[in-house]
Amino acid sequence: MAENTAIEWADHTFNPWTGCTKVSPACDHCYAESWAKRSGTVRWGAGESRRRTTEANWRLPLKWNAQAQREGRRFRVFCASLADVFDNEVPVQWRVDLFRLIASTPHLDWLLLTKRIGNALPMMREVAQQCGGGEQPMPNVWLGATVVTQAEADRDVPKLLSVPARVRFLSIEPMLGPITLPGFNATTSWCPLCAKIVPDSLVRPHEGEHGSAALPCASVYDMLHWVIAGGESGPHARPAHPAWFAGLRDQCAAADVPFLHKQNGEWLHEDQGGDMLGHENSPMHQWPADGGWSVRVGKKAAGRLLDGRTHDEFPLTKLHAAEQEAREPSLFPPT
Image (cartoon, rainbow, N blue to C red; front, side, top):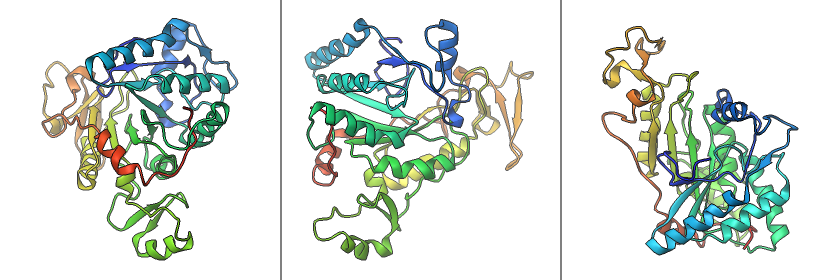
């Protein structure tokens, strides 16, 4: 639970509690579960109690917020690396306390990344009812969903788009196959009232079904503001093909959505170049599609380069805030 983080897309990590349950192929080699087993501090799984972190830990965001205010900057806080904010096993009061902390730290951008995006809207409404909050998305909350396969993307991207948020993002790590992002083309739009992607040929009559007060349908890529991708790391890491990352990057570029390539993982494809010396006896994986080989070289050697360069794009939050002010449906977050 380090105060600072080496994660490329965040300045700090904050864990209000620890413990979780595996719900996705992304969880197969969960580093947090491995940490829990080593530390012996919390049991993993459904029906197990989560462990709230110390009051000293809960005071850290207040310190970061004061520093950010002094320095005239914003810090990105990843929440949570050893838990899930929208975990069913977490007491409601803990989540209420977390959102009150978020509201009291306006100089921090809170990146709430979940593998349970279907829980986000009802749980945020539950928190708001406890706090008597307002009707607009919290200005310093970035809501993210982890998807690692095409099936998860098809299922969860519409769920993410249905939750009002200043910034919505996807974390596709570990990427376990090629993914075509739902609605990332010029022939579909997102209907915020139906919470589904509809063909553009039906948009105008479809909007009419909701009456004159309805919010207009919008391009999916206007509603999704950031995509992060990365390969798996750790002792049991599965290989990822660089073409998967490149395909995702190209979709984002065509849709003008910021893309951040976090890492290649533990494996390096022969087409990526790099130094393979010293890895002649390392595990290898042959790809059926192109006959090429990936070699396990370790996370550091595999690096972050994609087609010879890094990709470190971030959403322009001020622009998004201005654009979304009149478009976002209401939510009831705490104030």
